[in-house]
Image (tube, rainbow, N blue to C red; front, top):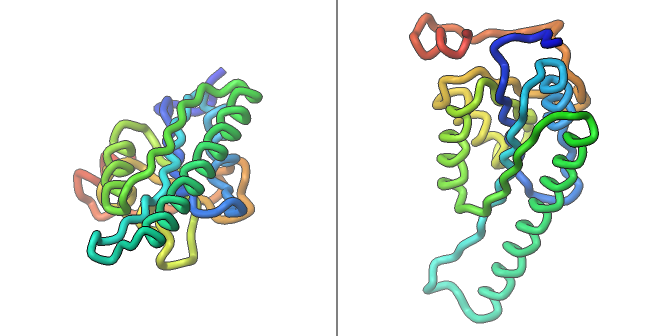
Length: 176
């Protein structure tokens, strides 16, 4: 039986930057999807490193290519693990782990948020982290509700809800 209404498609945004980065958004999103009877989409992009051609020597190009392969493999590993977790609890999941330049990554994520009822992201304290860019894009450009999950909150709870409201049509759509 569905306990939550109007939530059918949940987007979980997750940037993949290193192997040991903790994420509360995954557990939180999976538990919310289970409760709502919703499906999830995990968008776990990684930043593709590029250098201007004038700077690139053969050695530098090799290092950049190696790092790009490493981060892409991390993203694939993370999305496979999340797919397994979703399958284990009976939540339908689709995953995507594109490797894009930073601006394309944020633009692609913003487009993805508009296709979902709700977006869930990890909170991030590091100002240069790509997750901060994803949070900003979701909050300001998506027109959809966003849940930013602090560390340690790995299952859905709605005891405290904060709604940002400016009276605009965008805010009304997001609140709905």
